[in-house]
Amino acid sequence: MSREQERSKRKLEKNPVVECNKIQNKPELFMEQYLN
Image (cartoon, rainbow, N blue to C red; front, side, top):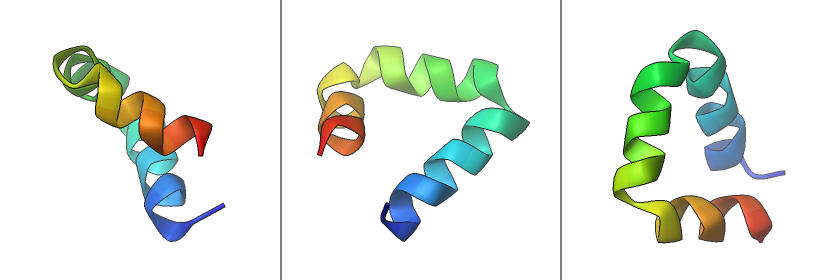
């Protein structure tokens, strides 16, 4: 797993609401990041 993904996961754990909002705003970016 890349550092970016690690960082994303850590942020997600710390602040899931904000991260979920970002994911909903940019679902294609999120999917790209997590499926690759």
